[in-house]
Amino acid sequence: MATTLKKQNIKYTPTRMINVTCPFCGGKSNKIFERFGPQNFYTYVKCDNCSLVYLNPRPEYDRSFVETAYEDYAEDNAFYQSGELNNQDKTALEHNNFIIQQIESKLGFKGRLLEIGCATGLFLQASKNNGWKDIIGIDVSNKMIEFIKNRLGINAIVANYEDYIFEDNKKLDVIYCSHVIEHIPFPNKWMEKIKRDLSEDGLLVINVPNQISLDRVIKRFINKYLIDLRKWEGWRTPDHMYEPSVTSMKYLFQKHNFDLLDTFTYSKNEHLGQTIVDRIFHHYLKLGSKIRFFVKNKNTRRT
Image (tube, rainbow, N blue to C red; front, top):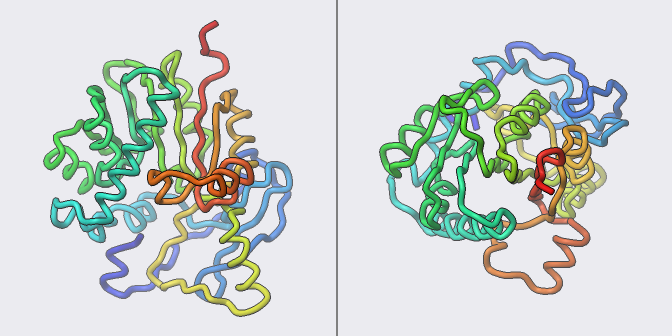
């Protein structure tokens, strides 16, 4: 992130740091979990109530922070730069095709789909390739949205999701949000709006990083007790407001009366198939670096 600062080799300095309560439960009781950043300037704490690891204090989440952290992130994307899929992009598109198949198997039909934080639109393209007709993307980056509209020919909107009202008031059958919600300072507002926007049979799919994945546990042990291998460039912004886990995300879903259908961890190559060992690692132990959740509204399910 912070591409402009990266190009100019300028150190990021927060305009103001603010103390916050837990973004999930509002709890005030916590313990220091990890210090990081230049001279360990930033601190993650762990909530004593819901187990969420979150940034506290954190930079004030104002327009200046959003523009610094996100507006220019298109500049580092090869697909955005050339309009052509490189090998990594092709792999990502295959992965997104796999996710679409997972969604279709749980939803049972192709309906109206929204992706929050659509970036260069590879997930939207995969949806289109698989026969979805009513597709919408939303992102805070003007550059990314223009790219999706002009290059991919897919409906896309520049907006903050929590503030946007769909003009036709039509409900959404799928809301897909991949590695976005951890960047949002007020997740409860998102969950409330998601409930309002989803249709009666609607499906919410959220991907987040896994704070207690095996690789992160090992890295934290090495950094704390052996040798600190972390590198934090001065231009970087601490854009993850919190670092979720299965436990903390389950709390958030229960709080907002969502019904958890399925959850598992995964890797970037999950579309290539899984061995028995993979299934044990990701579906039973849930030790992978990323987590996917499939949820529905409890109070809107048909009987």
